[in-house]
Amino acid sequence: MERENLLRKQKCRCALVKMDCVIQTGLGLLTQSFLWAAVITATWFSQSLTWADQPVNAITLLSVTDIAGDAPDRSNLAGMKIPESCSDSVSDPTASSDQVFPANIFGGISAVDWSGEGNDYWFLADRGPLDGAVDWPCRLHKVRLDFVSSDTDAVASKLTAEIIETVFLEDFYGHRFTGLASAYTPTTDHPVRLDPEGLRVSPKGTFYISDEYGPRLMEFSRTGRLIRELTMPAHYQCACPGMTWREEVPNNETGRQPNRGMEGLAISGDGSRLFGMMQSPLLQDCQRVDKTAEPLGRNCRLPVFSANGELEAEYVYQLDNERLKLNEIVECGPDQLLTIERDGLSGTSAKCKNLMLISLREATNVAGRAEALTDESAKGIRAVKKQVLLNLLDPKWHLAGDQMPEKIESLAFGPDLPDGRRLLIVVSDNDFEMDHPTHVYAFAIPKTLLQQPLVEEKQKFKGPELSSLAK
Image 1 (cartoon, rainbow, N blue to C red):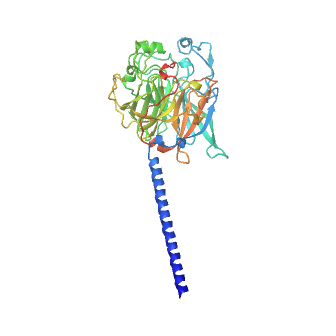
Image 2 (image 1 turned 90 degrees about the vertical axis):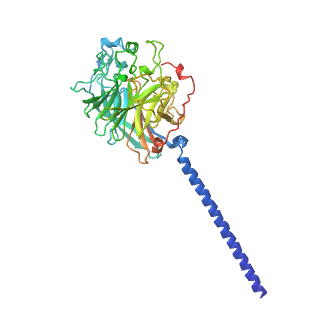
Image 3 (image 1 turned 30 degrees about the vertical axis):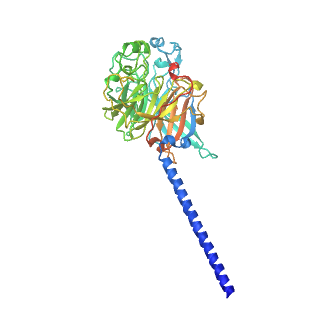
């Protein structure tokens, strides 16, 4: 009997021990569940923060390729001389009337846009070599950008570029537009010369192109023939156009600065709106000690047009420094766009090559305001909100250094990548210098970074103050 009672007690103790183990295990599992829930909540919360708080490796540089500065386009044109009338007036001191330029070189790329088909992109060339000293037929090129995947690295891939077509830009009557600076009439009405700077492909396959000389905003057919010209607000126009800076600046008080017109162009996803971007402030938005002094300011205009050409809105983009310039604009979401804000320095001297994410949602609409928008007169006006999305000089990209070009000028989104990120193509302008290539950079950008609310922050620069740098 005693032996049976002892066995019963031992069984009870074992049962209690097992029960305690079960309880402890349950409590452990419950604790772990709470911990995992906390981790998941924290992760979700961190992902719900602004894009600036997310890991920097969310953006990937996929590949870089170069198009040689002496690469031939598909125009089949022969060489051309610099006209006597222009050679002593352009700002480039190397221009001379006995100089011959090959008329079929690929270069001077000022804008790029995806064609909407495969891996084909349209590259827009600007007015030509030597600051408009050459009677350069204006043109754009179709370029095929293909990725060759790496067998050893899932991220690494090689980008290749092939020029497959060149299209000339023509007026209503089939005459080719020229980039020649002297080819103008001394009025604001339809000058012959053209300096193409912004490009977007419409949903119907036509080309919207902005011009710096005017500024002008035009629509061309797929074959390059002018279809129509949209009306620019009068306060953007230069009343007394000239061939050079020294001819225009002293004789004008309003309108675009010389060679600082509508540098960028964007189109909404549905094709219903066009967004222009002035490279620098209008003359009336600058400060000058006298009429011959350099105009300086920070408030650039960003006009918005309906597809039928009506001015819908006008916003202020404030540069971080009066020495910086704007070079492109592309839509990345409703009322949210990407721009290039940069300095005019190359190589190791470069201080600022930023892709800026901007939002129009809280900006003041100043549509039709012709009077000055200097820092003093623009008090009470809310500029577009902006934040650095991608600094091309960041060491992690390995792009900074001797090979960094002065002019990063073009942005375009291509077809979405297989992992859901957006493919961003960034292109430089080599100014038709045949010993300098056109650089093409391909980045993968998570869509969440382009759609997050912006947090205003002032960009800080290292090194010499930009205001002390040469123009």
